[in-house]
Image (cartoon, rainbow, N blue to C red):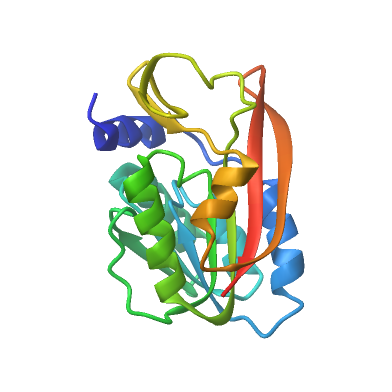
Length: 206
């Protein structure tokens, strides 16, 4: 299945989840500095975008799934949230101007691409992030139960049930963040659809 079509179907059937711990941990660091603008990259139906907007940040929510963004538009209108800009965009080819955001937040949105595209995305993130800006990124880990399942496309990249996933380890995360100053890289886990998912989280600064 075409990956864009897959995500349109996914978000069309998915209800809004409560904010996740990664967003809460990110905001604890964000509020310590003079940060105002935040890009939620691969925002889905916008649960974290809404959370950050409620904290007073100027949020840009970007995703390529119109079904997810449609849910977000409705929720933002219902809750009368005005400090939220919603953009449909292919996140593998960012169209933002250099130095556009104080913070970039990518929760489980950057582990779907091959090595070449993944590195290009991180290079683009460096360009659009302002000096001293913060990057928060969370991806599936090679420790995850799904790593190794399905057809192998590249090292640690598998197509399983039409869903392509790129599994990160600490070394790979360090490599794609080479231009940044890495503040922290940590492993985490959570129960998702009755099985344990494993992740690599990173916080970095330009």
